[in-house]
Structure formats: structure tokens, C-alpha cells
Image (cartoon, rainbow, N blue to C red):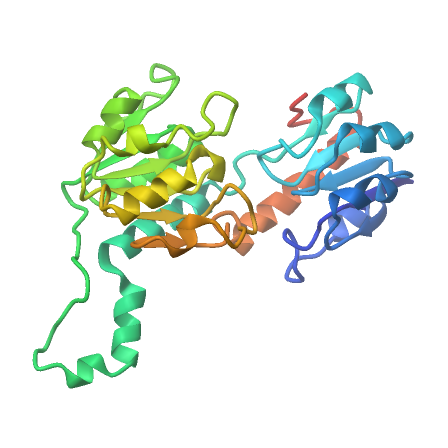
Length: 318
């Protein structure tokens, strides 16, 4: 049987799922976490390696002389040196689309929190402020209605489309900046260029993949074109935003608020300026992590390994 090593199994399965499907396919060893310095040793005798965020670099691939297959338990695959794997004729697969519904759901959870600050108001009641109020109702922040407002989506892939369907149900107008407008035409969506998207939208939500051409494209120049009442949402990739520029824009009132599920470095460093920026909500990269999404992720990961073993690899990215 093949030796199967899972480098960082805890995030996928902290204990509420099981590895039974994978264990039926080989001799499985699951590590909760693996630092980059420990990857080469742990995969040295592996035939199959699965990783989520543990980095598999060229040196680790070269040292793993028995390695036949790498599976990424995620959609993004920048943690694997794809070129080095290709040179060794090692297929690398990922798991597309498993978290579409969950990411769209969190996107609107963040939007709604910026609109109503329900957590803040609930804490206010818990602290006794409502009981001491002279009026039957009060609010500690401006309250925003979504109906009739404009959502700007950057990247109208599967997640962007899922977010659009929710936005339309809220009676919002949707504009989108997208590379393939003809291919991904969608009722209720008006395609615009990036500059127009940021200028016209009341809320901009990022749903584009990270690549060399768009790293930190959300910067001072682009933020300065947004409405002062606008919100920025990022459930995609942290490095899409130049974080110092966004923090400065929030401090200066250039935009009204931001809600982020991703940062450029995760976990964040103590000096990340967004941690203390005003009108900012940051969640710890949880959009993908509902149990339903992780079940789909586990299922497809096992199916990817099974397909490889049967000689018909699927979801190959290299």
C-alpha cells in the first residue's frame, strides 16, 4: 500500500470529521501541523502527500524520492512548487468550488455587520445601556440599508456569482469587473472596468484569485476614488490589498469601513496596521471553514487520491 502523509490535517479536520475514506487507500500518517523546516523529513518516504498551507518547496520535492502525487486540500495551490513537481512528473491536484456557498455566506455576514453592527449593539444591551436609555430605541453607529445600493464585485467566478445572487435578493444593483464578461454573463450584472467599479460601488467585494499582476492592486490611488460612505470586503486573498494604504484610508475617513477575512500574513504579525484601524472587522480566515464545506473538501480530497491511484487523476493543476 502507498504511504500517505497529511502535513497539516488539523485545519481540515480538528476532530469533527474523520480520515476513514483516506485510510482505506493506504498507510496514512496525519500531522496536525508541519513547519516548512520539517516538511522534507516528513515526506521523505511518502508516495502521496496532502497539504493545506504547509509549504512544499523544490528541495522537499527533490528529497522525496518515492513521491508520486501531491494533493492540496484547498483551491489555492501556491504552497507547492509546481515547476519542481512538473519536472519530477508528479501530478498536483486541488479541490475547486467546495466552499462557494460558505464564502458567499460570510461575505454577506461581513456586509451586514458593517451595515448594522449587530455585535456592538448586542454588547451595548448586555452592558445595560438599553435598560438605562430614556428612549425605546437607540443606535451607536449609522445604520445602512442595502436595498437600492450598488455592490461592486471584482471577479465574477463561482463565488462572485453566488454573492451576486444574494445581493440581487437584497434588491441591490450589481456591477462587476471581470476578465471574461462574455463567458460569464449573468442576469442582473452590469460589467464595468475596475476603476468604474471602485468609483460607483457603495460596497466593493473582492473575489478574484491572487496572481503576480494584481498583488496589492487595492492601494491609495484606487481607494481614493471610492465613495466616502463605501465599504470594502475581502474574503479572497490578503495580498490583494496594500494593507498600510487601507489602514490610512480608514484612519482618514477616505472610506467608511472594511471587513476582511484574509490578511497578507496569517496569523497576522503584531504590527499589522489593520488590526487597530477604525471601522474595521477582521475574522480569522473562516469563510471556507463551515463543517459542510470541510466535508466536501474531505470528500473531494479522497476522490482525488482515489482517482490518481486508479490511473485517472482529476483536478490536476500542473
